[in-house]
Length: 77
Image 1: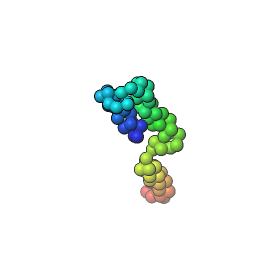
Image 2: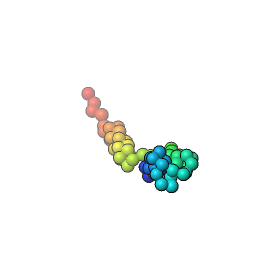
Image 3: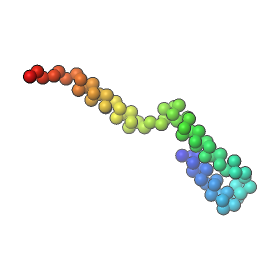
Image 4: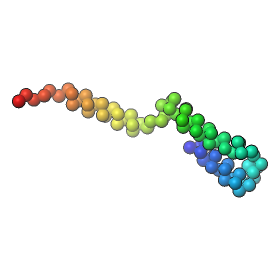
């Protein structure tokens, strides 16, 4: 999110012609958005950071419930 917030700040400063950002070229101003895209679409999935810990916990609980359901003996009629 840091890249996104930096990109928004640079974009607003460029739009308002504020400070030294007013003299930067557009590729420099928009580069944090490109970095954010690369981070969220490439780096996080490679490192496994795209799934939350809650997802992992829920998946383990689901597998445990399924295993427990199949381990119980069936009642005969």
